[in-house]
Amino acid sequence: MIYFMKFVSICMAMVLHCHAFTQNENWAFGDSAGLSFSTLPPTFLLTNIWTFEPCASISDSLGNNLLFYTNGQKVWNKYNEVMPNGSDLLINVFGGYASSVTQGVIIAPKPASDKEFYLIYMAEGGLMYSVVNIELDGGLGDVTDENIWLNTTDPVLQKMQAVKHANGRDWWVILLRWPPKAATKILGTLSFF
Image (cartoon, rainbow, N blue to C red):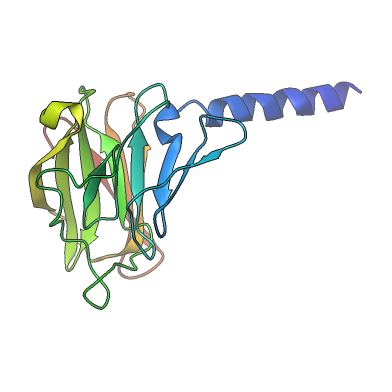
């Protein structure tokens, strides 16, 4: 019985720990699909996204409200409208219409800011980023800096993830590089991007 209680306690701790980052509560993906995990059971969200694979979304700090989402080509606000300057991101597209880059776009809050976010995406020949300021356009957001090249020394493949730095402020962007089975990382700080 004691082992069972320890097991249940560890599982509960893992669930609570995994659920701590509430900005991931609302997802937009696929063909106009979305899910909100802020309710039990999760509820369906209607979105305007259309993508084969790359997609990212972010919610407010409480996880209650979707702030915006992207497929790496366009950025939509919480009302499913394309943000100002949010229609020409240069993610690597497939066949001229949609991208099939797996894990090709991520959203990371800008360090020391609760109103700005980095969109980091894989473009033809490397990695790019744009900045979204959620305070602009009446609180619906605007893409303020667009399609800025990140200096990556190695060609990168279709895998990317952002991980919070141990300092609690900055972000590590982890990439699979060429040749395969080798990884590279980029530290996203206040002055890096």
